[in-house]
Image 1 (spheres, rainbow, N blue to C red):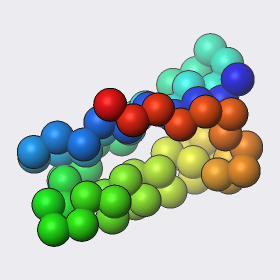
Image 2 (cartoon, rainbow, N blue to C red; image 1 turned 90 degrees about the vertical axis):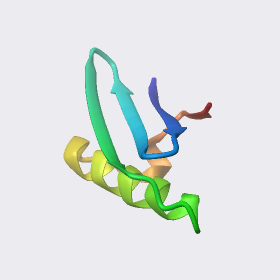
Image 3 (tube, rainbow, N blue to C red; image 1 turned 45 degrees about the horizontal axis):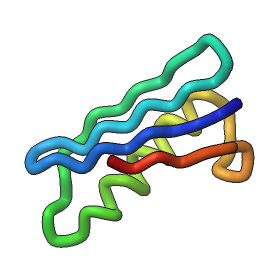
Image 4 (cartoon, rainbow, N blue to C red; image 1 turned 90 degrees about the horizontal axis):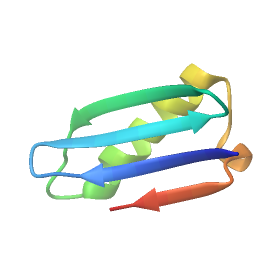
Length: 63
């Protein structure tokens, strides 16, 4: 299963991508005026690092 978890904090947005037994993490500055922008950039970064596309994901968690 390929899944990504996202946590939008006041200072940082954290993403963790889990692919089988490997993890890819990203911590970037939150964009308060448009929080989705940090999520999009972080997601692009972890997917690129893992060699995946958004279509490869099985699950996206936000909390």
